[in-house]
Image (cartoon, rainbow, N blue to C red; front, side, top):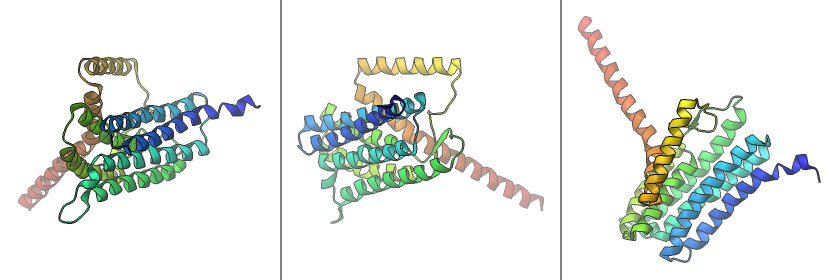
Length: 259
């Protein structure tokens, strides 16, 4: 056995673990049991950890390959596209109708389809880029899945009415889908070079989050972080657009006054 080639298996094991957890999430949700529904949500969250590890292990062992990129995208489509959509649908989103229109079904489909298109676009742009970018174009699909999974986790933790949470998810999931296929830039932490001060700040924040999670509930902390990552960038872009638009209008008025 060629040990130089066998090391390529290591990052792929993390990728397959992520896909397996996505499958388990669907199977648990299919039981319809609230406890299994919570297990399904947690499985998607753990799948994100495995997904983060495969790329880092590949870079550490210098085993990046086109095969690994394609395999990672297929696993992401299962764990962060199909699984969250299926789990949300079986949780109760599928029961959301409005005026005879299956709003819930449309919502989970838009989320899933947008996630798949987001992955396809990433594969194309990643293949053309000569230098890794510090930013993602559009919300990464694990980011969208994080919001859905942690929201379900919190809902099952608190025993919230499934009907109310399902209506919220039926509205939120298409929004997440649109963010995924948008041109909004999201920070990628893969290739950011951290200084000592930034590393110390990250460690401090991570420690603070762990303490809060231990003293409260981990699901609350993870939901807060997920929502923050998903919606801060669009809000920043919106504020910048309004500010620049107002400045342009002021410039136009000044030029008219001058004339």
